[in-house]
Length: 306
Image 1 (cartoon, rainbow, N blue to C red):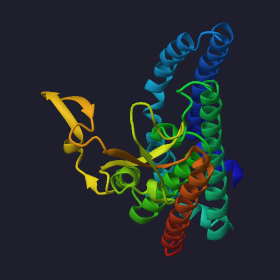
Image 2 (image 1 turned 180 degrees about the vertical axis):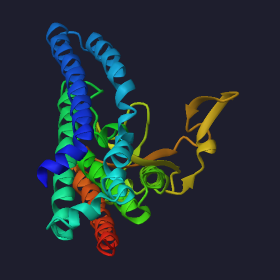
Image 3 (image 1 turned 30 degrees about the horizontal axis):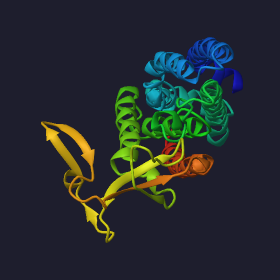
């Protein structure tokens, strides 16, 4: 059964491994260049920031699209896993060759979920290692930068596994590859977007609050995840943002607190030391959803008839 699983899914495995290797090589070359710059420009922080900024933007143009990687895992790994078996009738051959349904599912899904998780962990580790080469500069944000949060740490593995099981469940439900692919794409994209539209991540913990007398010279700690900002007057009442600023031209903000010199800006944020807490919280939520979908896939498959 292991050999058969490899034969059926080796294309996905090899293509994913090649893409991860290419990404890893790209990040390694860029990271080694960052380390060399840090050595050569150690005495000139401004020049170092500018140089690292250019190198960061180069890679960020690629990484910007990587939060959508789970959708590809769902499409090309998850959706065909069971849908193709039902569509071609090969599950009947397997179940009539002294192969039980339980073993068939355990080996097929066990091997593929393990590979998906390992690939997701490797993906997160590579991005984390690359981002560490910007340590000491303003570019080394992996918590305050939402795009970096979802491609570093353990969260990528959780998203990849979730998307894979979405595809498996869709394949078990529709038993046709193309409908399963369409439903998988819609569900995974909806899950990613809902995280932002419903502000899910910012509610993993109660945000801290800081009052700034001068928002230009004051700010929350580096790499903080800013939830929202508001303005208050001397009595602590919230003031609309358009009132808090002085406008001296069309769409041009010229000053802060022009109406009332006692206005203060309030920032609600999560400090950088909550990075791993948020990583594991999101991972736990995705694992719970994954287990539920996995149960649906197994239950739907168990009702199949030879």
